[in-house]
Image 1 (cartoon, rainbow, N blue to C red):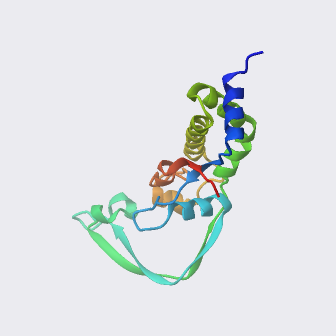
Image 2 (tube, rainbow, N blue to C red; image 1 turned 90 degrees about the vertical axis):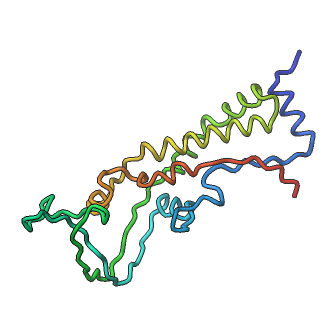
Image 3 (cartoon, one colour; image 1 turned 120 degrees about the vertical axis):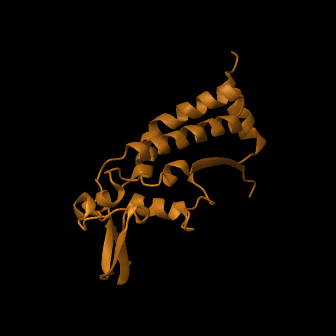
Length: 188
């Protein structure tokens, strides 16, 4: 009986002594504009974190009309839209970030689908490396989708006020754009 493309590719891979490795997620080199590694922020979002903030001075920006009254009922505006700024002492405090396991949920769901995706990739791309690249692309899509649809737990009221929306994991969109994969031939 003739072997399928999948069986042939797997047999060739297993007999070659090759040790391919697929890495998917936020890989090295993805950083925010301030130099913070995206992987560090992703880890804090995934598992939650408590961040102690030291006392500091902060500037609050508002907009004032020509008659001296506040625009927007005195609500804060961005610096570029303000014509009135005040400095305030911000006491030491702790920022609590609840866990949002967007990555672990992708892994949990992938356990049931990734073998079929890998098999399809091997058959369609003619080899294990091609199959792993196909799977890597699928995982990146799943991670992106997880971040783009994540809703629970919701953002704190202070975060909603700052961002202007209740969209956990989606502020600058850097996290959702930082997912990648690589297939390595690790011979060690």
